[in-house]
Length: 101
Image (tube, rainbow, N blue to C red):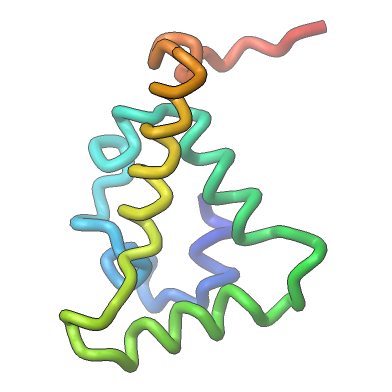
């Protein structure tokens, strides 16, 4: 998650700038677990996008008025929830940190 904060050039690690409700990531991502973190990480580090895509996206969203912003963090969580429901993924499966050999 530190890399996401650095990519977004977030001052003092303020995740509300990225569209989360708070800076408490554990509670924000609790419903989507590790899968939610992986989805955000993949979006931020997509090799098909220019390196400055994510910082520019954050700056663009923050320059808009509150009613015109897209809360990227919350949108990511909601999309992950919808996909989990569609593919019938149980949250317990997303919070396991074991490696599969």
